Structure formats: structure tokens, C-alpha cells
Length: 603
Image (tube, rainbow, N blue to C red; front, side, top):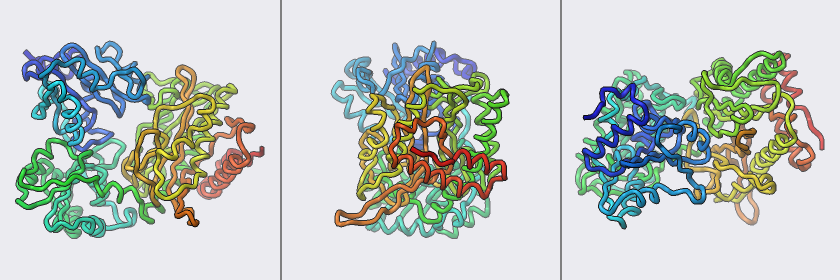
């Protein structure tokens, strides 16, 4: 008998036992929990935080597989140390992705399951392509896929509801383009007579309809679906989220609304002869199964992703403005941290997040943080996505370094910045590592590259200096950033793995190489940049990056003898710009402090 009424107080092993009992009842031999929601979001409403509920692991990436005898979590190097701690005594084993000799999920399933076994998934949480890949890889053993169940909802009885925060309209003062203009741009891309584009990614919906919300912590999104056709546009959203003024604004731009739960019925009632466009990497299997067989289904990468990634001039101006505000907050934070340490006052890693949020909140058009502040003192800095808690965070001391990764959401832009800060005496090893990370930042910031270049081709520039020391890092070098949207945005990236999306003017990307030495220290420097035109030659058109982030880089951590003259000139030019842009907003004491921190260095 299932003990579902004890959901709240069950331990992780008890929750696994409940899941296994239900799997046995349903004749399911393995169950996969992906750690996402029906919209494939990175940050989740509590309702869909299934992976954390079943395992205790709170990282933003990873999948859980449960069989009757074993359970495993697959995640990447950002979370190895965190996962080891959070999985302790749960009965769930950590499997390290992209590490030689470690079993993949496919390897695990093929080893665990016998011929004719049944693998179960919640179809709302897996994309069309994910399901297709499972069926392809496991079919050789005769393993079948059950896509009709939602097991966790049966045992997680106190599961939170779908969030219901009000939505707001983002005016064209910030967005640059009206909803009507965005719809017109999309419709020009389709030539079919009767067509429907299914949009499921929450940031794409927010961008398309110029709406923002508070349904998801850190991301200003509204849980919703969207349909765009040659004659209509529909926003599927709980009606309580849309007030009368917003409903009128949407209607004036040709957008009607329907209930969030009505999307599957709408798809199932599409007329014969309709062509339905779906992105198989974003649309979940449950919605895909709702499309009638008499409709023509066309797969394509969502056109909204690229349109959203190429910021218009209004968005770029807004982001530059947001960077100035964020830079002022960062300067005040760095000053206060320095005074606190010098005065031998107590401050913890957790306190840093509170202080940063408070300082950002005093800036105009502040909406919230763009992610939970990462503040790792010394050894904790080696945990790439370390999230200090109030009870367990370390107290800073007058020595060593702290890595601080933070960001803000403003109506005119989203920010993401990492600085590694000297708190006192440090070793030459730390200075050498810091300098090699800085060399990677500079190499990418100075890069000029042909139009059509992808992030995988640029990644080596950030790693080259540390590779010479036989050092590397496991995460990507850069991710896209939304405009008052998700702090992680595609389709562009800079990383080792193959992403063949070329850079285009107006794309935002972070540059954030790092060095992480477990039980010793972690170092990362992160700036945001945008892609701009670098001119033409007889060999074609070229692009380069414009650095947007405005915040000093700790000069006291640099080994100057390891830098070239060009690299020193870049640092000096960067710091001149930081002082020029931020000093008008600072008082006399703050400006004098910044002047010292952006002082010219010589080789």
C-alpha cells in the first residue's frame, strides 16, 4: 500500500521506495526524471521540481534514472562536488557526464534492463527528439517506451500548484518592437496557405508578446503556451494572470487569449490540411501526440530563438544602460566588502548575496536577481555552481580570494557578472591561475573573426593559456543572455562541444573561463559582450565583440610578467572605460576608490 499521505515528511529513500512500488504496479521497469518542466525550462516553478524532490539534488542540470534495484544521477562537471554532497545517504549514485569510463544513461539502461523491459517517462517533460532518441537507442534490446504515465504526481500529493503571478506588458520603450511588428516578421517566414506554429519555450512567448511575469524565480516569465498562424495569434494562459489593460493591449495587437490547459484540445481540433510547425527540441511529446494525424507536421528550429537572440538597437541601448546601473551596484559592493574585511567585521558567503540584491534594488527599473548569487570563498569557489545557504555558508577571512557570480534583472536589460576578489594575502599559484583566466577573457574580447564563425571555433582562445599549463575547465566558455529575460539563452554558445550556430550582429554572449582546484580555490572572470561589425576586406565580412560589463578587474591578483603588452593595453583601455562610464554616478569617495581600482598598469 502506498504511503502517499506522508509525502511531506518522507526521506529520499522512502520516496524512491514509493516510486518503485508504483512502477511495479504499472509494470514499468525504469523511470527517468529529467529535471525540467513541460516548457523545457532551466529554472523551474516548484510544481515541476521533480528531480529535486525525488533526489535532494538542486543543481540546474541532470537526469535521474530509477530501476527496482538501482538509481543514478547524471550531471556535468559544474555539479560533481555539489551532487556528491547532496546524494550522500540517498541510495542514488552519481554518474559524471563526459568523463571517460563513466556509463551513460543508455549504457546503464541497457545493462539494467532485460529484453522486452518497459522504460517509463512523463511525456510532458520530454521533447519529441528526446523520445525519438530513446526509442532508437533502446530498440535493439526490445525495450519499449511508456509515455502515458505521470507517476510522481501520484506519490507527490502535496505538489505545489502552477504559479499564478500577474503578467505585465513590456512597453516598446524597452522592447523596441511592438507585438504586431514581431508577428509580421514571423509571418513573412512562412509560405504555406494554412499553417500553425506551436511555441512552447517561455522566454520565446515572453519576447513575442512583450509580456513579463513572476512565475519563475529569477526569470521574468509567465507560464503559458502560444500559437501563431497566418491569420491568428493565441496566448494560452491562466486568465487570472491577464488584467483588463493587458488583455486590451494584446487584442489591439491581434492576440487573443485562452486557458493554459486548453492547448492540447486546441491542437487536437486543428482542421484537415493544416501544416503544424514544431521544434522537436522544445515541444514536449504530450503536445506532439495531440496533433491530429491528418495534419501535416513540419519540424524546424524555432524561428523565435534567433529573432530573440539578435537584439535590436533599443534592446542594446537598454542593456548598456543596465550595465551602468549594475556597475554602480558592483562598485558599491566591492567597496563595502573591502571595508568589512579591513575592519575585521563578520560577513558570510550568504550575506554577500543579500548585500548585492539590496544594492541592485536601489537602481532604477530593478525587477529582481537574474539568478541566485554564487559566492564561494577559497575551496568553495571550486564548486562551479556553489549556492551558499544561510546555515552552512563560510565566513570570509582577511586572506585568500572569493569568487562572486551574480546578476540583475532590469526592465532595460539582464546582467551576469563574475569577479574573483582578493581579500588579503594570496599565493603565487592563485595569482598565476587568475592571470591565465584573465588572458582567456582578453583573447576572446579582442578576437576578430569571419562572419559565419561559431562558438566552437572560438572556444580555444579562452583556454589556450591554461592549456599550456595543462589546466582546463569543464563548463562552457560563454552563453547567450536575454533582454530582460533568461540569463541563459541560446542558440549561440561558446564551448568545446559542437554548436554550429554562427554569431550574428546583436547577439549577446558571456566570456567566462575559469580554473577550479578542488579543496583549494576557484577563479572565474566573466564579462558580457555583444557581437558587432568589424568591417570588410577582400576576404569577406568580419565580426568582433564589444565588451558591455562595467566593473573593475582585481589588479592585485595579476602576475603582470605573464601578460603581453597588448593584453596590458586591453586592461588599461577597459578600466578607462569603466571609470568614464561609472564615475558620473558615484559620490566623491566612491569615484576616488574606483580611480584607484582602475589605475593604469605598466609592463
